[in-house]
Image 1 (cartoon, one colour):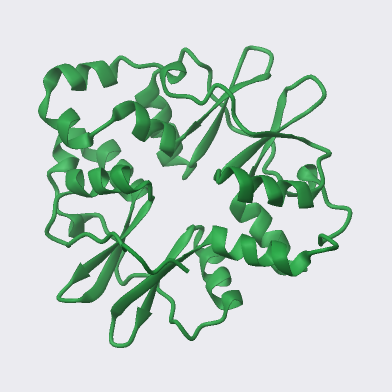
Image 2 (cartoon, rainbow, N blue to C red; image 1 turned 120 degrees about the vertical axis):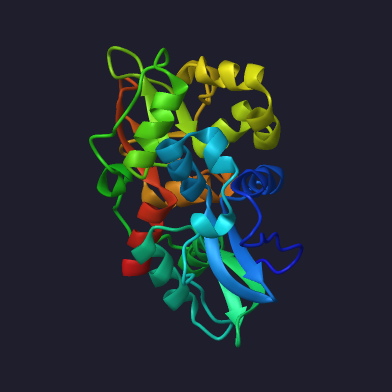
Length: 265
């Protein structure tokens, strides 16, 4: 659980500022705090969904309360790790505010914390034995081509609730990976982008190739689950592309997929 330097946002702050705070701090979720109480949770996908619905400029001027999830999903300092993991898995989120009655934020717990615990609990004999990437991946994967419009790809990801999108060539071979982190790095400071027409035009004309990671973390479809867990912990990525012998993308393994399997055994 993380307790130091917690980044929060207020319900009356605008979504442009919230996205800027996420960009600066490298997080995807912000607890929304008012009068020392957690009143909501705002995710990067909440902001992207608003932008897809009403346009970037209009969305970034909306207050956080217009997009935040409320009542917020939270956990207690006295909850077990299994209970926190179950809440994250059921909701498809990667972090939970830890709240002490009557609503005071004391920390954040994320899926990386749970994965690290499960990996240590499984040592020295990784569990469950015999499972590979092919057993836990989502297949067939949705993918885009490098020449497609970046904002179209963003809309595609938002509409299907995807955080990672493989980028493939005409033969289905993996050439890159597009993630929400890649989008942040290319779009840059959202407050600046919102205020400058030339920056807006630049973003609208970008293609997927301009934002995708050229050297994504991959795993062969036969790679053992224990090795996948270690890759997630070492590389701190949200998803790993699974490939076959010809480097064709045959699936995507997310940290939630791995966590779900580990919690069953």
